Amino acid sequence: MGGTFHGATVITLDAKGRLALPTRHREALSSSHGELVLTAHPDGCVLLYPMAAWEPVRASVEKFPSFNPTTSWWKRLLLGFEEHVAPDASGRILVSPALRMHAKLERELMMIGQGSYFELWDNGLWTAKQAQALAQSGPTPPPGMENFSL
Image 1 (spheres, rainbow, N blue to C red):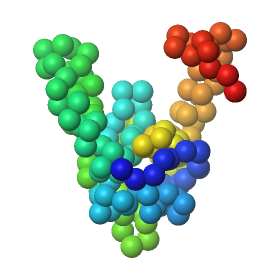
Image 2: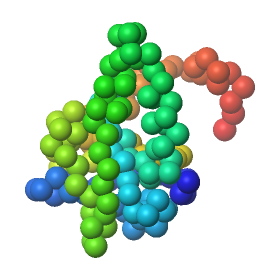
Image 3: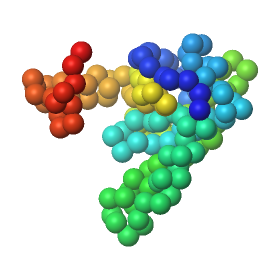
Image 4: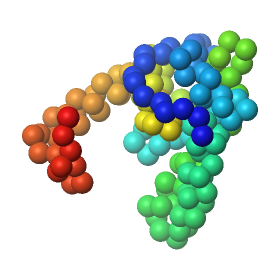
């Protein structure tokens, strides 16, 4: 299913809406015959998956109940915005205008590794959300992380 994606990288979107995949991640991202999947996340970012890692996620999303308003919106975002892309010879992929609009992607982006996929955030939005999350978290870990230690 490709590599494990970690780390944060500042990347730039060019005038045509393309981004160059970081060299250190290109081989692992292209492990699915070069096909990648971009889609919208409800938090306001774009998700970037290698095809092999996306397929089980897609299968789960397809099973969401369509008469539940919340799951319907998640399904609309995740499947409705799903795009299959392949890097060009320079390792660039095109982020569609619809996805750029959804995530407010303009020029400078943060590419955040999440294990089997990446999140792509507008740098300004990422900075604001990160500050908000850290301010709200306080000294008490969230449920499920009570025994976590660094």
